[in-house]
Amino acid sequence: MADAGRHRRPPGPGGRGPAAPRPGLGLRTHHVVIGLVVAACAAALVAVALAAGVGPGTLVRAVAGSPTPGAAAAGRSGTPTTGATTTARGPLVVVGLGDSVPSATTCDCAGYVEQLGTRLGSVTGRTPVVHNDAVGGWTTSDVERDLASASTHRDLAQADLVVVEVGANDFDLDRVDDPTCLPAESSPCWTDTLTGLHDGLTRIVDGIKAVDTNPDLRVAVVGYWNVTVDGAVGRAQGNAFVIGSDALTKVVNSIVDQVATATGAVYVDAYTPLKGEAGDRDPTNDLLDDGDHPNASGHTLLMEAVYDALEDAGAVSRWSSG
Image 1 (tube, helix red, strand yellow):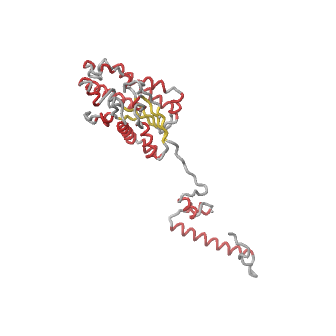
Image 2 (cartoon, helix red, strand yellow):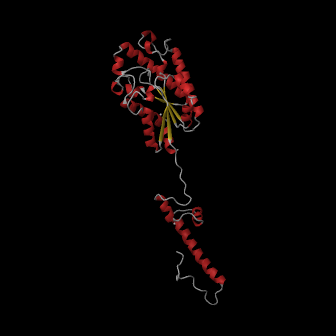
Image 3 (cartoon, one colour):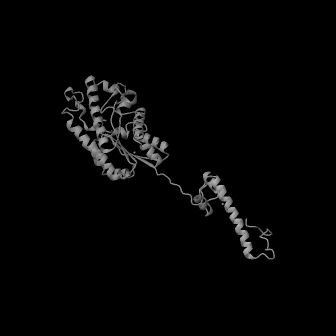
């Protein structure tokens, strides 16, 4: 948005030992008797195993020294068994990039990037780590340059999810109410800036993927409900402003969607949650008094939009099973 400041007893003594061999019975006979007893026990084990549906291979491993049934039961109750291994999943790292909307520094609340980290941690059972590197007032060019900074580069190298929302500050919004700047998609008022947004955002997504080769990495690019003020504040600027800002916002969102499709990123529709399918929902109660930035409820709507888009893309189930 346009602004100046828009992350487990052997027998004891006296215990009975084996009886002495009877006269006439040699050691070989004694061994034969023992052998017959062992064979009988083995046969009994086989019968029990087959009755339980255990294959011969499993039985061989059990005789060879696998945990006893009691030990297995202990393992299920939470006590590790000998040789048991567990795979601990690491944290789920979320990085936010962009302007003051993802930065949320203007709102005395948890921003949607932070809320998203909490939600994903709860659903996936992984500890969320959020690095919010968004900065108020930043343009697409600012974010692109920041990819080379040591701190952002370090954050991105470990990321599972990168959320990018940027572009509103690219535009000279002084002309948003100028009727000659319509239709917005073809007006020379916006052509160069729209091209710059498309190319810059493409380089940002490609740059993120160059830094982070995590096969489960997802990049979510987020659109806007309005590139400038909305709700009661927007209406106070007049009808031409309302029409012009809405038209430009839709073109910007179309560009962001195109970049997502071309780069394999996930597009997040931020327009519908705040403005409705038909664009006739009043977002005033989800914005700060400046009409420009989301308040706590606005950030929650944006978080839900990003979460839903990631879930639809299969990212959440992937992070949960990884």
